[in-house]
Amino acid sequence: TLPLPDEGTGALTLEGVRWLAERLERYSVLALGPGLGQAESVGRAVLELLALWSERDRPLVIDADGLNWLARLGSETPLSSKTVLTPHPGEAARLLGLETAQIQRERFGSAQAIAERYRAVCLLKGAYTLIAAEARLWVNPFAEPSLGTGGSGDVLTGAIAGLLAQGLTPERAAVAGAYLHAQAGQRLACQRARPYTAEELSRALAQN
Picture (cartoon, rainbow, N blue to C red):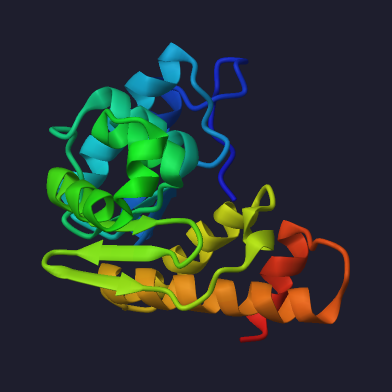
């Protein structure tokens, strides 16, 4: 773990990114988004970090606030050619400038539109998660309601990043990550009556 200088804000800053830039060469994958926040200073830092990472063209996973910033920065934001975007329907709506209801009505087309606009693999979360990559569309065969638990998306981000670090292509990492994540969630749901936590999901995922 590398603690970054944050100028007392508790958020990612340009100073932190420039400090990190000197150390990026040792890392093979970047997962960006969970816990970033929406302060204006964060947006400048995100743009700087994405530009630095795109120069290295290494695998990248963007989730949560990283997606919100990408929507604000626009589709010309520099991204690695090995990028996976993991929006839920609300984040997908922001990425395309649409309403969430439109995304839900046209999930297949929305996933493909995001993949095309941002030149990335798009994993659109929801019941029967979709993965769009180039001309292909994958449908995850699970619809597990408890995967909507807070933090479970962060677990998925980590799973995809881990698979990328093992050498899977972005498309394969997204497909396998979604499948293993949902399989772990379904197994937990069958084992207990109460909802499970993200920590429990993470442990179950490690057992796959």
